[in-house]
Length: 169
Image (tube, rainbow, N blue to C red):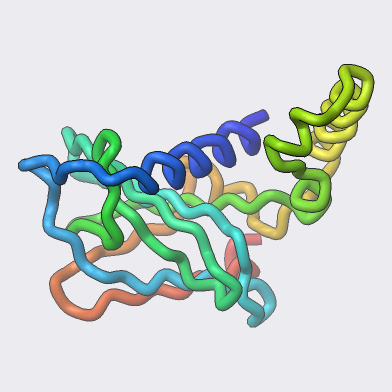
C-alpha cells in the first residue's frame, strides 16, 4: 500500500506541474543536479526519488524520476508551483521503484474506467497480490525516510551523484 501511495504522490505532482502557476515569492534559488541510479552497472528507469531537506521549516518539496539513462529529472515544488532543479543544502534521499510485476499490471485511468465491476475486483485482487509478493531491485533501506544512508549536499557548483544499488543490499 505504501508503494501505491508513493506512486500516487508522484502522479499528482506531475499533474500539478502541468498547469501554469505563479512563482511564490519565497521560492528558493535552484541548481541543476545530476542524480543517477544504477543496478549492476545498468541504468534504473522509473525510480522515484525524494530529496528530504535537513533544514527545518522548508515549505517546498523536491522529487525526481529516473529516465531510461538512470538519471533523475529533479523538480522542486511549492504548493501548485513546480520548477526544474534543486535548492542549495543538505538532503536525505529515498529511492522507490515499482517492481516489474506491478509495472506490467498497472492500467491507465481510461482502461480502469472501462472495466466492469467484476473485472475491477479481479484487477484489484491481482494488484494487491503483486504488491504483497513482488520484489523491487531497490534495497528496502533506501526507501525508508529515517534509515536511508543516502545524503547529498547541493552547492552552487557542479552537482552530481551516482548510487549503485548493490552497495546497499
